Image 1 (cartoon, rainbow, N blue to C red):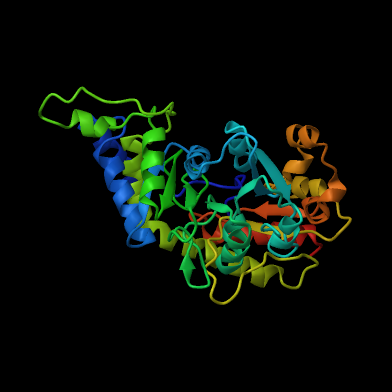
Image 2 (cartoon, rainbow, N blue to C red; image 1 turned 90 degrees about the horizontal axis):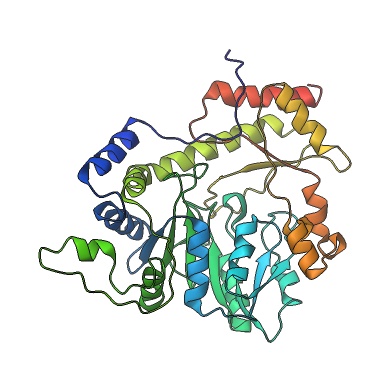
Length: 383
């Protein structure tokens, strides 16, 4: 058995991706060009008829652009789960608005819409649910909540490709916008990158303009023309958020593999569930029978009172890398001090944070590596 240290996550890329990137480089298009156009078309087709897909250089950029396009302005409030990476909240501050942190459901660790009810004010303009670990927030409950309070909905789907709930694919366009991540640890990767999807032609056009300096024509349209086409108009103070062709070329190879790579993650999750079912551990929420869980993360919860850090150190000593998702935002110095937040305001997130450990569950894991993780966890539990 190979006893080399097993990292928490590795990208699932092969020679096809290498060749696609090399071909893109040799084509001469190093910025946004035909591969970007093709990737956007492929992704839109995956999400469903009538969906616009706009690529960006990160999901963070995508969240920023989506919020800006929905009309979030200084002084507005946006509901954000405290159980997320800081990017979800920081993009609200980019626009001069205020992220209002919300506690999470104790089973799913997704945003608690009942807790959110008490935080809605006349300044609340939007809600940004996070589909934690790849388990979707209920779309019907989300629509009902947003509808009653007249809120825009921007979904943080960084973990949720592919995922579905109640017969609706995450990204099919039922919210104002959905944003995916193609970071190295995600189901599919472009190294860095993301995608904004929406059914609103107006919102899509605003995102396209703002992702590249507020220019009314993108570089590909200008430079591919055989006639003089140097003229362009700056119509807004935009940003530099476009994806490159080599990255998009990798994404086009990865995208057809998305379901297969998700299925491998689900297989690993089932194997872990079977192995750990008799231990003193809380297993991840699986979702209902009509839920397609992306299994971006496999998050165990230790018994209350056990030292999580010692557990992580023990697995590291056994050659197994782990991580923690997430350190809730209300515990982070910037967010805590800015709003004077206290752990007792977020009882679920504060308590569950002490218990969570994410195990390796990436699609390129071998069966032998999965068994190594199981052996290490059982060894820690004295079995």
